[in-house]
Image 1 (tube, rainbow, N blue to C red):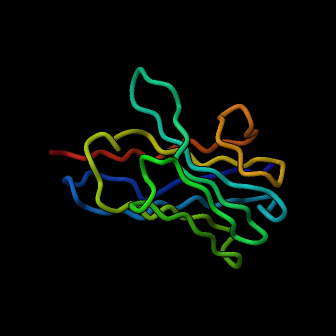
Image 2: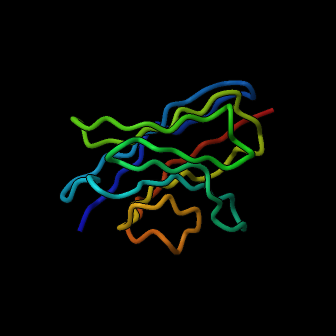
Image 3: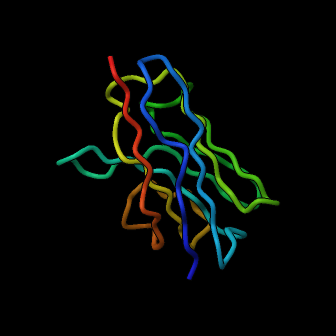
Length: 124
């Protein structure tokens, strides 16, 4: 089964930016969807963005639309999440997940493979 490894998180001040990466090993993302979720301590995992690997169709949570951008690099088998204009409420562990379907699901249960996450902390 595919293994996902997130990276790129860190500590930034409000208004700052980061580029998160999700690298896949084993099975590629081809033909499926990849999503980003985030989770703050004690809270539910929350949908952030998703992308279809083949054509690059994207969808975003309303709270991040205009600030976050999801993209993919076919050659590197990697999905990115560019996070701009960060707010303290964006703080959390960001997870990359693969869905074995073409649709851009926004619910955690729709995804079957998850990485370990990368921490994003936004200070005020």
